[in-house]
Length: 90
Length: 454
Image (cartoon, rainbow over all chains, first blue to last red; front, side, top):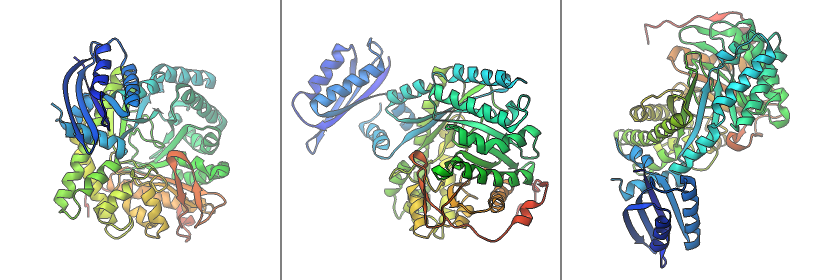
């Protein structure tokens, strides 16, 4: 398993989760956890995913997710989980 | 499980507070390239750099994308050329040819700086060392990415005052040769006392002879992150202040450790050290001066500055040491003038002088850094300033350095423009009284006594 964290931030609209999840399913990326809130009209989602099984390179996934984000007016980032683990866990 | 707030905190540091990995620097030993034929030596150097560092830039960028953190610079440091060129170089021109080869190799692998056009002459100079030092002005004028440093003293050996005298002249000559670009050659030239062998930061990086064949050293930076963290503890006690700096330094350094480990794995080169420095840039919110202001000073240079900087430097080290398996390099707070908007403002406000900066260097991580001085400053005055700074390092068992830029054709009240990461700097007044009889004396200052510490 190779865990990565996806964050989606932007103005709320219909179908954000659907579009992101469709892309992940098409790319064979399994979702392990999702949490999501809306603060002041802004959509804020965090996903933990497993990128071990996808045939695409990390760079490709990162670029394509950013494109999906542009289409729905959100900023989508994907980062390997280690950076958060390193910074916040001893 | 990582929480939402932790993810937000990390990404906020990267996006809003300029947290970045300032440099991945590959140290490369050139000892096995030595040949008595200059052309063969150059070919060997080129081959080794291309073989080891060919993927450095691509790997650094790839790691940056995977973790969503900018890896700003990819650089190379090499064994001091004063040693490498000793068998092959018969003249200063021969050394300049090596510098040009290094510059070409740096361009070919895509790194923005290559350090190690250096001589380590803390106790005495070989003929080759002296030739290399004399060749520095021409080498820096003819190359773009090569950085030079000369270590002229150490706590164990004392200060080589002959080298100090030469370096005053070399700095002036370098300034003259690059006067069309506000004497920018001097921004690539550092004079050290107690220079570390594993420093990843330019312009003073070189790969010491105590190091292995190749090594990955990483420099992290995040003055903006420390400043932001301190905003939340305004008016609190020193205990709270120090704890906050320590915790923040820990988090920043952990990122450096992660990036260093990954870079080392992917390049097949051993991990050396993480340098946990607060290195400012001219960008707003990326300033060490702003941290000092947040601690409670109107401007850096005000009374209390040395104490505040001492506290900051020490807490950065304490927080960082536990975060990485190996800490090294310079590790602490840098106080360059031209690369820090807050420092520039302090100079312009009349609060920060060269003398106060000298006091600050007793407790910061390096020394008098990126300071523009009048173009008519004499070589002996520059040597005098170097000698003072080296003495601070020698007696206090710390690294100190001098990177002064006499801006030819400009004086106090004017400004030098260097561009990019090097920024711009107001030209600062220098004490005009003479020290030439002191500088003219030959020989060296003996090593200091290591007891009776008062």
